[in-house]
Image (cartoon, rainbow, N blue to C red; front, side, top):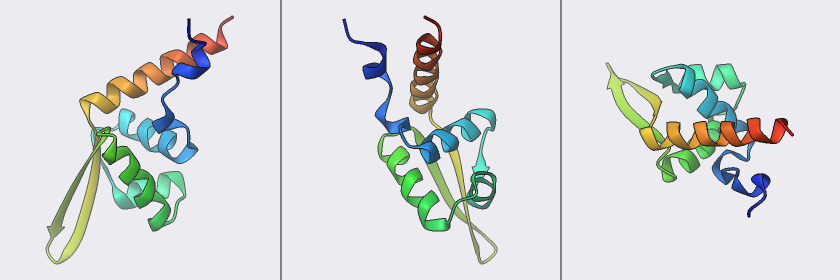
Length: 97
């Protein structure tokens, strides 16, 4: 039987990706600027971590223009929500002997 620690989702290993998913689980959708501010990240740092979550199909990125200004928002996908919930469940099991 696999030890619980080996069943944690590697996509959420980094604190930024963990934070992104936590914010997205609590909100239907979040703008790039709001997510950047809440997590205190640089543009590049946020973009690279969201790209990793998007590649894993855990986050959906919606880019549009409002007037002439770009507007990017993020939402957690159904697969992302399920994977994050499983990750949290495993963490809870590790906390209880």
